[in-house]
Image (cartoon, rainbow, N blue to C red; front, side, top):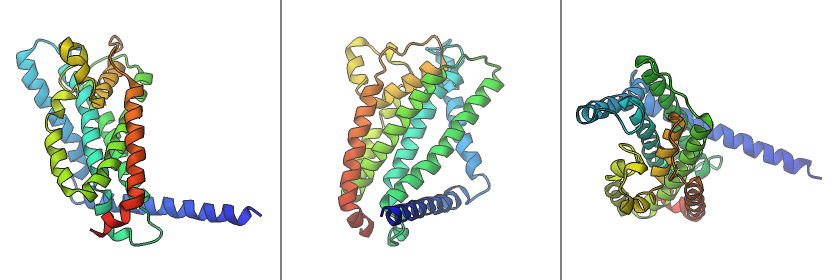
Length: 265
């Protein structure tokens, strides 16, 4: 009795995998395949940012807040922050990017969201591994990494990135002015997200407000993984996951009801 339904479910899953794979291949060709240095630039850009930060702060300070190596310290903040800002923005424009394909019944708005997230998440993770490994090799570092802390930081990063991206996918599509406002709101986030410092160095009277920013929890947790002696006392993973769950649930609900209107704009 249930065999035909199972077959139908299997065909549906296969169509979803095929649609996601096709969308990922299209984006690889259009985004990274336009020039031979497409993927190379993805690595050089954060590496150049780390070099600039290290040079500037190296002139002002004897050592970073953690450890003795400026590029290694800044990598713990800049790479997660770049992951979040880059991928959340790409997810937010998924429906516009894949609009020609959404007219086909086999392609859903979830396929478009997942394809963009998966491809760009894999790319950014590769960038993070290459850049950190490069720093360790060039400076002959011997870091003691806490891999469980790093995996937790990545889980928090994935959750927040996709939830902000999905919610903004709805908001950008329905309220175009929000995209401009979001750009303005995010300008100070580089300073307020723990890229340049750790929460313990923020004055106590501002720290509670500072830690309302979920990205600050992620960068601090990542540095806990990079530096075995750092406790990251103010990190609250539950706070990040709750925010992510609420935003993702609302974003998917709104998109389920409005994705066709957004795609037709």
